[in-house]
Amino acid sequence: MFDLIEIIKSTYIKSYSLKTNTNWCVVSSKISTRFVCRKIFKCHHSSFHKKTPEENKKRKSKNNVYVKDGLPAVISIQNDHNHTVVSGEALSYLRPTRDVNIQFEEYFNSGLGISESIKIHEKKIELKHGINSTELANAHMNPKYRTVRYWYDEWKKLNLGPHSGIGVNK
Image (cartoon, rainbow, N blue to C red; front, side, top):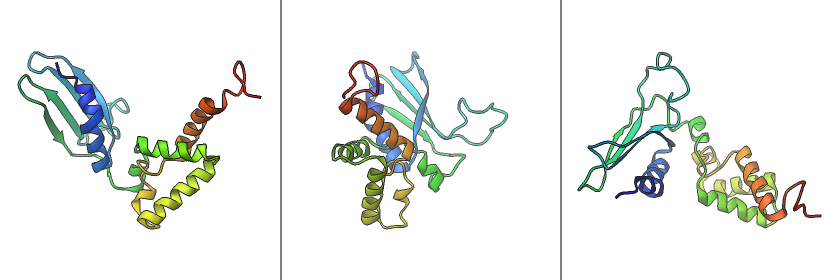
């Protein structure tokens, strides 16, 4: 039997998200007689669980991925977004990649704090892509401060121990 979740997580959705500067959320995962398994994804900017249908009757972008017996996979894409996908604001809502997370962990292991890590990372992006590049606004490559703070807090718990209670490093 196909494990569609692994197919989606490992290849299709990740690569499609990176190429189109979008993020996708699972709307439904249905079991049916026609398909072995099926998942429907919607763009994370859609109105799913945010507004009533009457408030937002604009076009919705969605990916409909299902697997039929005898076929590797069928993917249908309805690429009508009701928002821009190339503006600085839209790019800032993207999820950072695992590679960026690892890069920040290396900064923390080198003794840098949150602000220093962000400054060095932004300088590297500016040197590679230019000072006015869209990569500075793209959260896939340049995460927000609160994301880096979360990563730093997780890194501190793992490497330095908790702030209080059992296991505090003195």
